Image 1 (cartoon, rainbow, N blue to C red):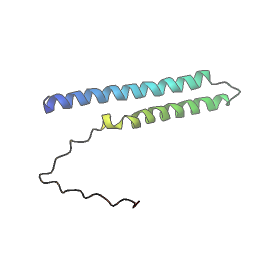
Image 2 (tube, one colour):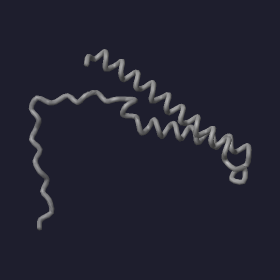
Image 3 (cartoon, rainbow, N blue to C red):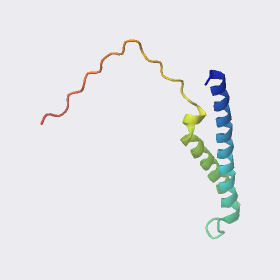
Image 4 (cartoon, rainbow, N blue to C red):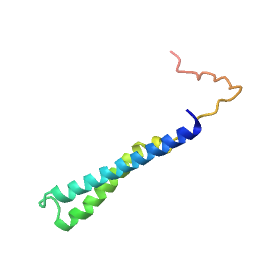
Length: 92
């Protein structure tokens, strides 16, 4: 796969991840606003808590998928890697 195709695919994946996160936040906010019982919270507070719940849901979804949103460049292999010496463990 060429670099251009890879960049186009990553852009497409980012778009769908952002849309799904936004949709998830809207759904959760709407559920909280419409179906939270009035005995649980005061009616005006339902709107504020619904919007906050939507933001938290969207943020947590995007945070968990941050590797797909912001991929790291591939690691460059060093020419002569230094040997790693084993650490001394506890003596038995």
